[in-house]
Image (tube, rainbow, N blue to C red; front, side, top):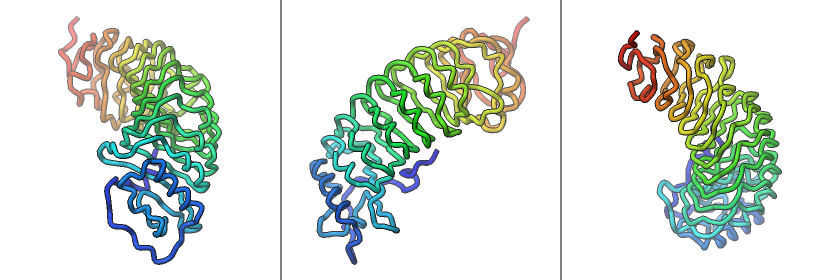
Length: 336
């Protein structure tokens, strides 16, 4: 799913020529809040354009709404890690009542918890905080921001369990919590997300236990649970009537019979179930999946039998079937 922040583009953290203000459009409350925001980040060099003598609608790394000239986006994103941004997420971000998007990326010295003042923002739809040093739990107060559509908290130092209350967000279409230190199970309540086509990305954490069967109620667009400690059944994530594009269950301890599963023929492009305890044979229905780009069954010693001929199954090399008891092209022929 494309977020508001992705569509607006990136702000490269570098000194650029100051904008020239022809007239002051910026709301004075927003300008005051942004200047506090800059001070709370210890006046980083790349925000030098945030000059109190200039119109804040022309400052870099922010966007003004053309209809009311209120600040609706802050996007501080760097192509390379920028160590010059220090401190916590500025509390003053909560004093921008028209803010819809907040993006903070590649700021390793941004530390501390996720600011509770975010709960004051009645219009916030997109939060993207990634590749930073923020830590602590994922806060329960995020569930109070009913406008949220996109949450990305990837590649940080977040710990603790995933709040079950996030399933109460009625408009959420993307939840990315990958590459943190999260523990515990996936909340059973996650089967009650309202929006179809949810992206659920929880990879590379320390999550554990069986995944809730209620996830089978969802028509997920992408689900990535790789690199955790999950076990048990995950077969209910699949089905021919779903519109799933990506399923990555690799590097867990899942155990279920692959033979009896069906798959979406028109949408599935990525299937990785490697490094698990999955058993059975490859269903012939997989030959009818039209648009495979990635397929990996390797390191499941319980998989056996002939690889079905046809479709795209033979376009992948032997490493997609490595360390199984499968046979047939692209592996050696089956023997009687």
